[in-house]
Length: 72
Image: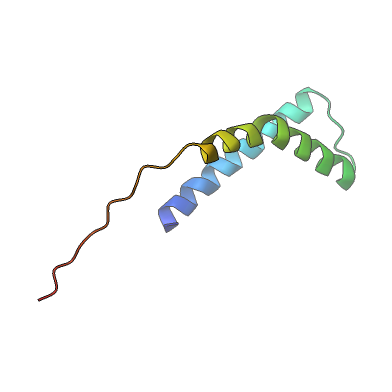
C-alpha cells in the first residue's frame, strides 16, 4: 500500500468511526465499560462493515498490467 493509500484509508476509517459513534449514541447503545464498547463495536462491524467487505472480497479483481523493461 502506498503512503497516499494509507492516508486515504486512515481518513475513511476515521470517518467510519465518527459515523458509528454517532449511531451508537443515537440508539443509546451501551458504552460505559470496555466490555460494552467492545460489544457495541462488534455488533456495528457485523451489521454495517463485514457484509460490505465480504462483497468486496468475493468480487474478482481486474488483473494488473505488468510493466516490462527492456534490458539491453
